[in-house]
Length: 312
Image (cartoon, rainbow, N blue to C red):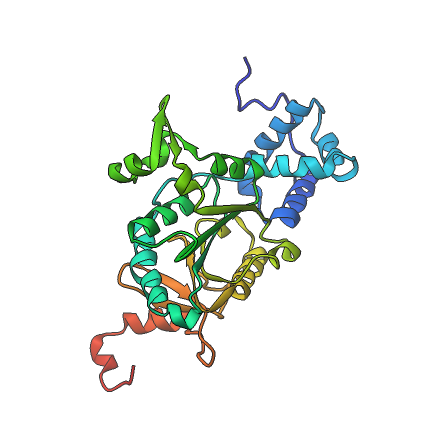
């Protein structure tokens, strides 16, 4: 049996590497540089073996020129996407979402015309994030479809299929309260099936964050979660995606990024908001300028005496 790390003698040439990296970046925004070259080579080799094509050049030709190309490109993206996630990841931020942002939005419900809070999990992978939001919303007494509506999207059709099925292994529950697992899941053969009721709380859609025409069909959101996704994009793609999020958020709407991500050097359109449990980004209300994150950080670092006499 061959090792899964064996490439059967296949080695990406410099030209092939640039061709594939450019193709993948233009289609999905995923950025493969020299540091990730071996990872790209290994995953491409897996598809070359499965299709019995014999070379990377033949595989590239198949994607770009044959009638099967449009169908094969999603398969390649499935091979390349990183899907490490679990329920209640970065839990403090999710609590801030429920306890502070949702609470504010519910308080101002009349101003919103009584409509549900619209939440979008962008880059939802196998579904743990949007289901976590749905569970916490239910636990807070919010009615699905009435008080809150959760949408979730991903570029990987394979991951979306898994999310819709809602079947998870033990590793997905590393940060899950046992009470919530018992309440919302059914165990069978060492797997956990999410309840049908909770499954109906989330609308999953296949969506490429670079596809502006399809993005236009998505309704305006109150909250967008895009956590640990843009770290895989190059700088131009990051800026494009952040601008899309700005356009899809209502004024006053919130953007939640992963704790290792920020908008510094990407956008000055958002303001950085300090909540009790976390820091998040917000699209400013009309007439309000976005605060510069660098200025906020600098002000926070000044001694208290330096602020005396300064209007906040």
